[in-house]
Image 1 (cartoon, one colour):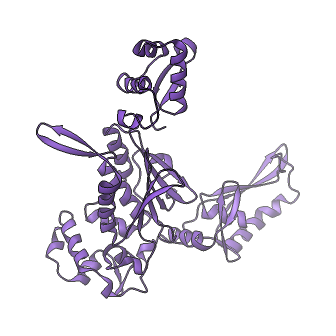
Image 2: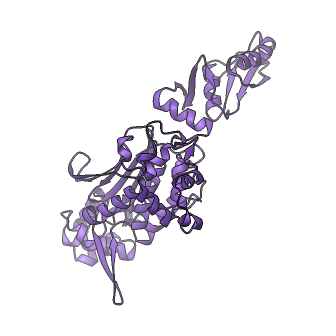
Image 3: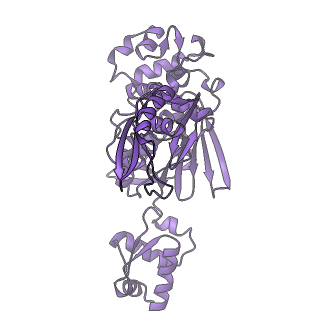
Amino acid sequence: MRVLSAFANGQGGELVIGRNDKGQPIGLANAKRLLEDIPNLVRNKLGIIPHVALEKQNDLDIIRVKITPSSVPISHNGKFYFRSGSTVQELDGKHLADFLLRKTGASWDDAVEEKGDWDIIDESAIEDFKRYANDRIPSIVRETDLATILRKLNLVENEYLKRAVVLLFGKEPQRLHSHAVVKIGRFLTDTTIQTTDIVSGNLFRQVENSLEILRTKYLLSNIKFEGIHRRDILEYPYEALREAIINALIHRDYLGFSQIQIRVYPDKLVIMNEGSLPPEVPLEKLKTNHLSKPRNKLLAQAFYYAGFIEAWGRGTTMIVEKCLEQGLPEPEFQQEHGVMTVIFHKDIFTEAYLRTMDLAERQIKAVLFVKEKEKITNIEYQNLCGISDRTASRDLERLTDLKLLRRFGEKKGTFYRLNVGG
């Protein structure tokens, strides 16, 4: 029953009865009775109806019990189970709360905020939102009644405010949800932190303030002139960073107590938020067109009306596009232990950055050559710098060890390309 309830709570599954641990058929002496007993037992214990079938393998009776995914949570003896890999796990604590929310179609931000009253609302935040939302809700600018605005946004239930109101328009959201902040740090290594900033306030201001702190304190800008017009181009695309921060805020699992982290390393920028992807959006789909399945529906709706996001699930593909347009490697999307991570890689193939890596002038020259010409061979490197085959081999091997270049081919056909994405 534990296994079958776990199947029902997940993607469904099949239980085969009449085989040994090696998968070999050994048959059942009471197959016909089980065909009647199993459906009744499953229905009485779990409240679901399985598909039970009898088949013959080597003249031996085998029973297959198929369970389809359930739209509602299924418990066994008051406990909930979930299939993870080849094991059955009991859900408890935060994992159980998150599971029940997803199964019931509710979201954390849709629940009533028991500790919040109407005095917590920052009216200036409401006015900011009205300006933001003017394009998508033109009538909102003329609306002066606060309660009407919140009701139209589905942020009120029986005169009680929902949790989303606190995060979107609260005067001090962290008084009720202290973990709802963004933590920014400059990391020299994974264990060496140089500076730290904590960004609080409502979610709209967290987006704006996080980007401003990154722009003025943590990131460099390259100056580019287009005619007489000067452009300051941030080392990571501003639009991509903005989208990634917004995604972290509205897809975050607020049942957890960890903060959103933005880690700035010498060669990369990492944004981390607690909260796994929904089953409908696997990790490998993030760089292609995919469904939009926000974890916090009311937060996502408010950001959509404010013009901060689109409703088509294109946010992650836009992040990739903006990085490629700026000549950067594709960002990485990772998911592990319930944490979603986006990794932006800096363009490390610049003369300024290469000079920080203790390279010889000829090695810097080689990397810049590959950046322009796409590849280099040992002979081309010898001719470029006037060095011996032995020196060229040693230099190229070190550039490969440093993950600046990547080797392709064998023997005489060997050539080197940039190790984009590292």
